[in-house]
Image (cartoon, rainbow, N blue to C red; front, side):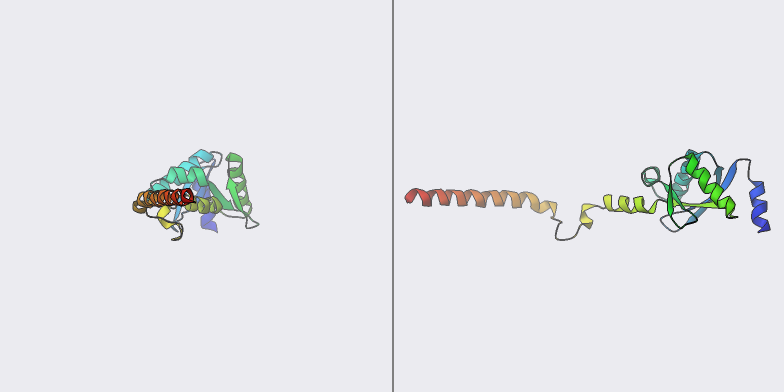
Length: 156
């Protein structure tokens, strides 16, 4: 416990330690100003880019950052006030850091939204190479049926 207080005292004034848990399961530690949520977001983007996540900026912007509060709820960080609340909660609980993660609910939605069509269930997926021939063939069969029906009806 003494070491954590020593580390806390070595941080610049107004800074706090943060940990980012990434979707890949890695954890990154960094320090940032407690009142600058944009700085924290950019630090998270840099950590995700370092893991090879090319669209890290879009993922952080769209999914957002969250932390787990003392009730076990995911709290979405939407601004500097939320960030300050997270730091206050960590300090009250005797922790020297705030553990952040991408908002899991939004991240799950992004995963579903970004799935390529090839990952759709097999009953829904139609190969593109078959679409045009099927449409032309279906149109041709329909036209033949209409001609046959017209001839049949005109004879009566």
